Image (cartoon, rainbow, N blue to C red; front, side, top):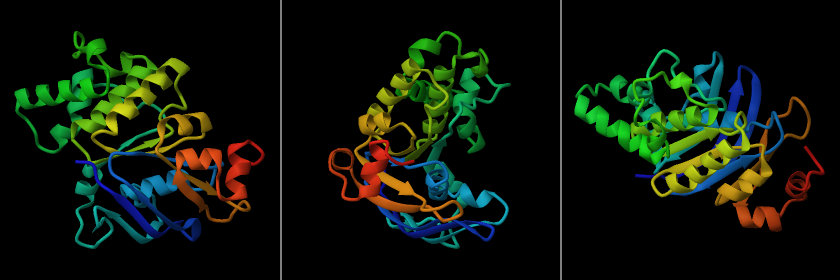
Length: 258
């Protein structure tokens, strides 16, 4: 079941460097939210705070409050593994496990969680591949290496692997930047389909993509190199791209800045 994500005063550090400062936004269930802004403004850093991947880096830490359906995911008694199972992530470049088959790639997370029954794994793999619009293309070669697929197919395989464990939130960090236009369109079509079941947050540098796929858009920026990234404006995508409230947002979207 898709869940609401709420950030309140979220600030993230790499050692003593403050990467993002005082981020406040609410992401509604069953929606696509795009994070846009110039390179280095903290979009990907913020994305990684949502599933506690940021703190994996030495010296990295997060302040503020981040909740998923009002549960503080940074509370002391929270199971970090459970958080990352609930909040899946798809990365910039397709990263199927190179030595694994297509089938084994999809069910890797389930096996890690202790699922062993073959019938359960088979059902979950088919369901995830169907959801990722990949089943018809690979159903006759599930035993072949996942790394043998095209780039666009590999990215859909990674999405299938992410949703096989049935998360509530799916994070995507520039999932189409390494793909050709046809594969990009397939991933965008997939986002429309997946938002019926998941809360999706996507980082993208592609303004047209943000306008096409998202319900709401958040614009991040930095004033000067070395400053922390800040959230300038967050609104419906239609308003952000037609009549933004902030001049910085308008300048970025129209290409006059960043």
